[in-house]
Amino acid sequence: MIEFNNRIDAQRVILKLVNRGFLKEELYGLSSGAIDRWIRVNGIDPADDLPRAVCESANKLFFLANKSQEQVTEEYRLLSEEVLELAQRIAKMI
Amino acid sequence: MNMHIYAFGSICRGEIDLGSDVDLLACVDGPAEQIDHEKYSVYRYERIQALWKEGNPFAWHLHLESKLLFSPDGTDFLSDLGKPARYIADVGDCTKFQKLFDRSYQELRQSSNSATFHLSCMFLAIRNFATCHSLSLGHPIFSRKSPLLVQPSLDIDPQAFSILTRARLLSTRGFGENITYEEIATATEAVAIVPRWMKALRSQHSP
Image 1: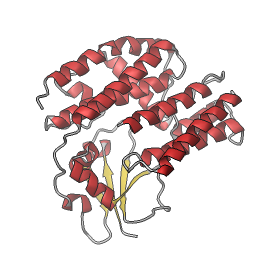
Image 2: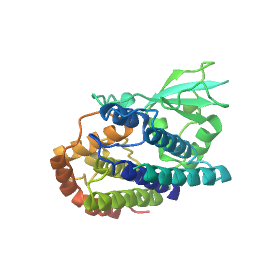
Image 3: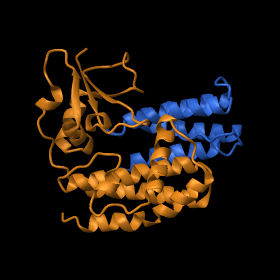
Image 4: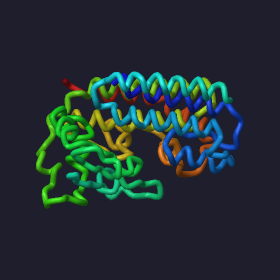
């Protein structure tokens, strides 16, 4: 139960950081469709550090989402920490 | 690798519009690296069996709204599981979605940053709250419009509900027209009734 809202909290933290930067259109979510749209509409180079960090965050959160109904493992804890580190990295890029 | 493939969700309800996706489930017995996890919900057979035993809403969803697309040997894995156990996690689940709504509403009122995402989370919270509640009463409604179909229904302006639905599609699929500042204001005002509606809905529940 807690994990579900924690994952959304982590997603919210990342989106609020990314959307601090002034762009034509906000990043609406961490789904691949939302990220592709954000890159396309804002003319972002997918090879830049920011979109790469956003994609990395999305992949880790997607993995956590798939693990949400499993036992909490050491792997889960480490990945959660990695997502927080990524958020810190994104904060420095904005 | 053994595998069964199912369609589930809106397509099985015939609830199709421009934003509709096709939900696909792959039940597998091992690592499924060749399956695109963006396109399929991939579950191991044992995990599905465990969801059935706990009466998880997803198990009920699959039980009531899925269609077999592929079977390696003519068997229907989900159908053979029979009916899932009774759903008993409604109190925890409804609390979880109420918290998600409260948090998202608070964020939305504080700043316009990521407003579409906050609206999308509110849609998820409202829809899942209604679905879990209806399942706890034994009359599950999995439709995207579940908040409008439960009793009492969410008395919200259709335009505001459509803004929330659009936000969800923008967030989960990157599909649709942007939500304007005026629309954000309309939706923010309209959802003020949600906490009262959630309370009213749960007050009719007798454990």
